[in-house]
Length: 250
Image: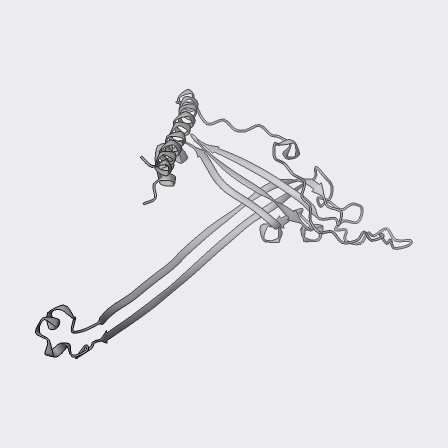
């Protein structure tokens, strides 16, 4: 047995072992939750979660704030006495998630090529006068004939729509005044939990007077909509099948 093949077998065995261990731990957790509703996660501070990193973006040079003399009105304010929109860490605002994505693409490529070459020698050094030479020497020195063709077609027809609202909390105020927001919503219906996560950077000027903002105005937007529970678990392929899909080359 060759060394590369042995290495592949060992690697495959290790991957299968890890998959078995992972599926075993997961199976134990699932067995303990039979008949139980999936639990909602606790409300946590996003900035204290493992892997949380403050957002760093290109910032302009700080500018000195200007005030209108002898005026009670503040530039950019939506209320006479106080601006009710989110502006500081910990403030809340409502994100209106309105995603309507539709794409219809179709393309076709065709290619065809045919070539033929033929060369021969009628009399190679008087071979035609020698009886045995006709049997040894070929009548044609070179003959080639090739034909190739390809036909490729592809189409994409996608239509997605998501409309909902989620409250987000301001987790960071950037030096230029932009706000980093993050919101999470969980809804449990019977034995299935639906999760909606929204995060990104918003401008205070884009926040409406009712303290809402459209998801299309969120920069670096991260919107995730999914779920977990019995229905989601049935729709997922088993761990062994996922491992084989990764390892099998065909």
